[in-house]
Image 1 (cartoon, one colour):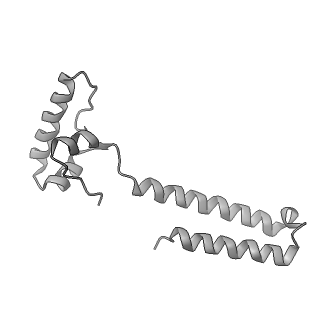
Image 2 (cartoon, helix red, strand yellow):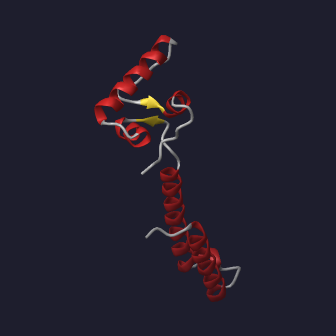
Image 3 (cartoon, helix red, strand yellow):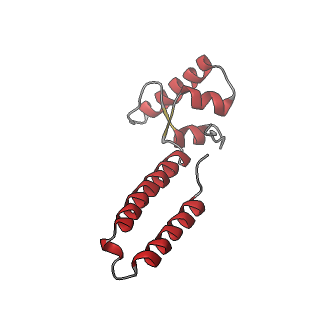
Length: 117
């Protein structure tokens, strides 16, 4: 189970306090414990970045996203994508075959938003 941001922050605060108690404030940066803390901090930052990336919806939607949003078959989803891409091409936009802009999809489907599963 992934840790929440609050749990990670509490863990970091605990490690910082532990290092300060053992080494004293002036020698913290020189200690091995501080180096361990730095490594842990980088690991936590990477985990937070990954969680943030997962929580943000992608800009482009594929067939499976359209299926989930509209509750249609894959072939119907591809037809919807093709139709929307043709509209965008008429207006001079660049399109990607089999993908559709999430913003345009949501605009054209009257505010139906795709859920990220």
